[in-house]
Image (cartoon, rainbow, N blue to C red; front, side, top):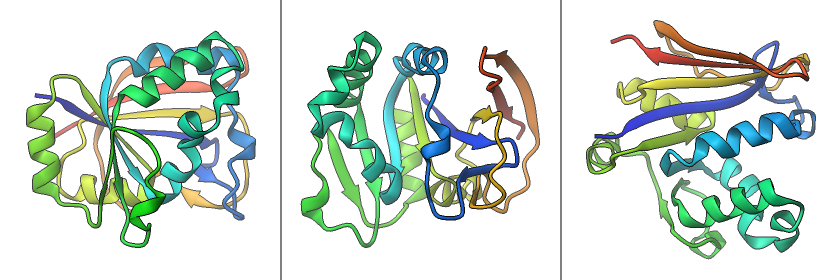
Length: 187
């Protein structure tokens, strides 16, 4: 059975984007990007909301990303090979422009539970709005945060309004001051 991971990059003050929705401040260092590439190979399925999918699909639609370097090529290969599920009630069908991708109009906890049962590795869910549904259905097994050494003063909080008890399993500090924290959700 697979494990569902909620993963987020966030500012030190707890936001995933700034008040204007920008992610410009969150570009990972080369060391952090290498860490992402190293750990993503464990992930078989990605669950995205519309905004996160629209930000990420360039890894398949813009060849210059893969041409930027060896790590970028590895990430692109992984992105193109992984299964992606996009949850959106407003995204038109023809905006799903990447392979191995399907569109779901609403989050169905039982369908995600079955997906976990059918998967041997990890599933990841991105975006706190989408993750709120998974937290509410008690589907999330791990939380992985990358806390960047910047405050942005507002935006979308990294966590939905939920109460969690977590056990710290791993911590890692990167040269740029980013801290990776991995927690399991205490049931």
